[in-house]
Length: 254
Length: 258
Picture 1: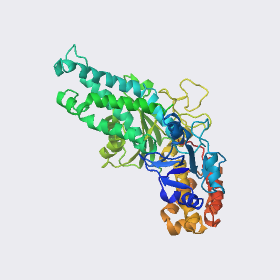
Picture 2: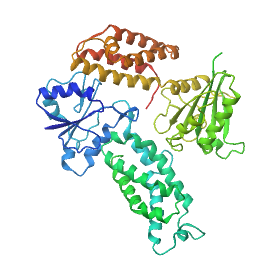
Picture 3: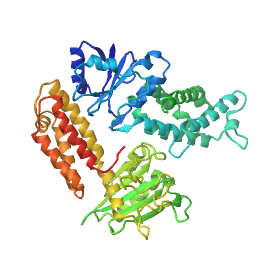
Picture 4: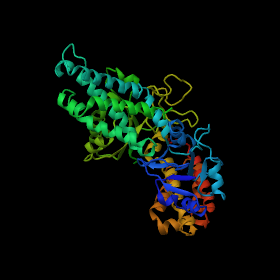
């Protein structure tokens, strides 16, 4: 048994770590982006992130559940906090079980059907759904697909057509103003969710999405009409990568 | 004289979407000449919000006035609030700016608490549901309806209290269990994390002052204050009673904040 502990407050985790040591249970601290190499994962919930407490328990469960790794599906996800709860996968830090090894042995694995104990805080599962589905708007996948399609058109024709012809005139394939607007809207939408990324298990992919997006801003924010910026910033390949990341992560939002 | 209160909501107001009269409407509040709801269509953007505030600040510069701006999160970017604040930095008044829709949706009408006044489609909640009573026969917003939304966004009392609950537990539990300290919660905080005690006490004062019309809140505040200063803590289990009293207090505040 190896227990990884994700707590944004190391002082708060001290009593649990002390008890784990007393029982001889192997454990280590998890930091956002670390590899997961545990049989049990303790998530201190809520997580302080972006100046507020967020609850991402069910996102973590979903992540372990749907990831391809069989080991992930067997992980016993345990949330820890100060609620007086009787739940196989919740640790009340004010009153830790006498027999901690037995508690961890009995914690349900992620592939089984159970719901994390409800904790108060900004619900990241709901926020992710809102990010993907929109709030009276089109889904983010559909919105980004409009960008990806236009970028693909540019990429497809730029070897055989002058860049201006692809972008401008009555027969243009892509309106630069529209493309710039679509990109701006995507960045606005993502901008509200980006600060919460460190609380999520797929943080490395979201950090990559942000990094790639930043690298391409210069093309989209300068009129989308500079062929050199398009090529230098690898806009076609990077747009596809963002699309892939958005699609991959959508599996955790349902 | 009490300061005037202006709540500006920039959103996809359907009736203002194609209005020839412009993107703005000022909705009075029943029996409260000091309060008003300013409805601004989101197409006015952050410049529209900034310009309206600047103009109104100038008109009101001789009076005490408070402003809260609510921006819908699907249209306004994360940096818009900062941009608006910067543009108004040298103005005679200040405004609190919050986003709604992508998180805190207290402004939406909730039947269980009878709070809020928007539906989710771009209208007042009573536009199509005549059983909901949020406006008078002249179209003025009922005062309790305005006041509760104002109070919620102005103070964010429940959220702050909830945060304080977690922060104090995160401090007190390890202090007792790992560091071997003992004493009342107030003593431990005063000695080792005075900023937590200041925060908790200022929240209790906020509730005493602004929720004075809610007897249950006042009752729970008294019980909680007593526990903080009288309950001796020497193990994590001793914290349970304080934690449960925190919950009682939170439950007494009839707001939802997530």
